[in-house]
Length: 386
Image 1 (cartoon, rainbow, N blue to C red):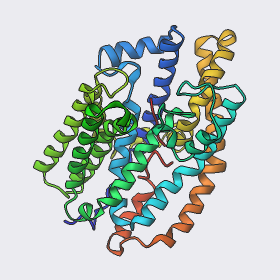
Image 2 (image 1 turned 30 degrees about the horizontal axis):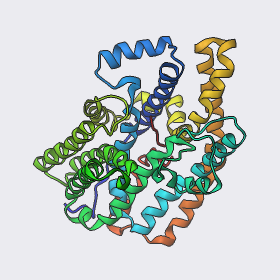
Image 3 (image 1 turned 90 degrees about the vertical axis):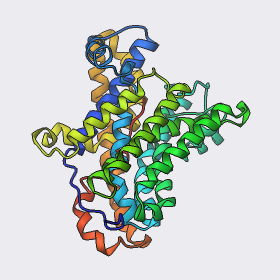
Image 4 (image 1 turned 30 degrees about the vertical axis):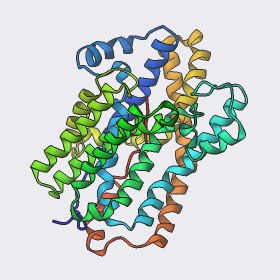
């Protein structure tokens, strides 16, 4: 079967995985803050450490766990879309859905820094007008030193580069689809080796971070190709091993930022995605799961802007657990506003305008359309970072 006619695959468990991912991201930042920044602790952190870090072999703070789930879902769900839609329509749909909420969150972040309420995530005392402008196109991550007014948005760089790669590799994706993640692994390895051996002034550290994260996206793509029977099992194994080698190289090169258990984290996430993404049962239909999943992009964008000030202003009155609950309530309210008044209207407008960028392939539009809403990437409805 050619990838230009991808089969319909239902991902009924996507919302459950999105909810797990965004909770893992929130937990990660709470743990970083309480343990590394404040030098304190919390009973939930102790429990998670005992069960999942010491017992399960995951990274401290569950670093990369939520990111890897989000990224794997992206590769799994967007491969068919990249094949089915014209390049212009694909990019307009994907990037267009990222930008409105991102720009609002960045504007809030810049205002909070200018007012002295929040600090910069990259450590500078403030942000200039030119740096602020660059932030709206994610350009601050490529400056030396890096400028990050909203640190979590580095994962959107990974997202956008994956979209562009899918467009550039579309001929391969429609004819020899397994070559796409294989070539992607080769490119990621080349970037890691370049930054490892090139003189420091010529290195681009952000690209190493992207290269170390993309294997999670490509693993999602490989899973889709296997389920869609667009590649045989031997090449699926080869492509999987290629992604593992990229993660190993990134680990040995000290590109990752919180331990050396990233390959094991990838194994755990791959198993979780395989087990849950096609699950269409009771847990995935819970109202709290659906709410968390659909607001996960807004939660991702806003939660680090809220965490530190809410916690420090409430912990003295409410205790640690009360302060965390206060943070979660404020984040939920802010995310609901961003989702309802920015994400939903902008997504409707994008959907109404996308026909101007070309039609879907007629041979696949009907087969895949019912799954499109259910399988939209978490980064564009969500993403995460830690």
